[in-house]
Length: 315
Image (cartoon, rainbow, N blue to C red; front, side, top):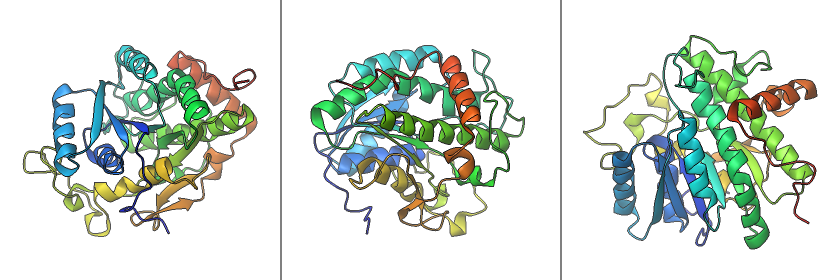
């Protein structure tokens, strides 16, 4: 039985967490640091990174932390952050948690992409493409679970049709967000299939956090206190705090029994201990031609070629 309060020892491992200055990303970073991992906090604001680091040290005085500036809406920032991270001696885990929560599906980046698509999908594809060689090298040198964990949402299970056109969005924020997360899942599951085929020592997993609300989130200075506006949520009475919403991602990163291609979510779908769940067929097993088209589009949008496939394995 998985116990979120008794994580496997993580000493010696390095885990990068995007969106680490608030919400689920912050609490995932705190929990990983408490288990002994060196955590790289990735965020776009130096001030908020200072606040997150101080808050973690307040809970975990022995925390081993560093940081990298990362704005997922800026291709230049993503490339710079990836170069800085790739220069590290090891990367055992990459939690792709950050992303815009804009309610407007029509919001655009400077490059003209939908902000939701850019920050939840395209930036993450670029990070994976640029960091995968370093992560594979970590696996070959050090062994152990080397994992890329993609954050999704339970809303994906409500989709009636699969996604074939990555750029197609919606002016309705929740619809655009759900489509972006469906593409996230398609990429994550296909990435794992290709990693296995290439015999690379890296696994790709998906997590769904359930519903995490401010009203049930424990206090952390500058993260969850009177200085931070509380977002009201209609499901607050039945939901969990954002500390608990981080559990599925933390399990996917640290459970020695977890395997690539798996999905972890709260037991009830909304809250509860993290358990292995059944992935939606539309994203886990799309038609091969549709998946091939989506993969090509993602590589083109991200400006990278994911280094998996023939010749990718070490040997």
